[in-house]
Image (cartoon, helix red, strand yellow):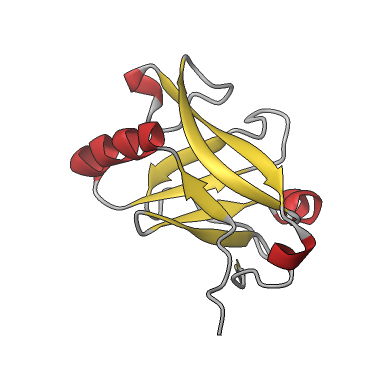
Length: 127
């Protein structure tokens, strides 16, 4: 049986920032909203520091940390692979844990091929 295709990955630069945040805060979680105030930048919180809404979607994990996205955003981006990256500067929200480091997480998207889409890892929905 073919291995399932992941919906999520991270760049080496993003992993380095995540490791730094893990040392300081322990377990983390990511949430990418679809609203205006926080934009669509992924936000990083201490695990349990943010509660996904009903039917929000966990598309995978990075270093064991759950990556949730807004339910409506998922409907728009469900055909895309997410690659978590980090850039210098301050994001729109300012509540994310990487902000004091002068960094902002960001996502690069690419569409799945039809073959990949047929073999994706399942998602988890919040209740």
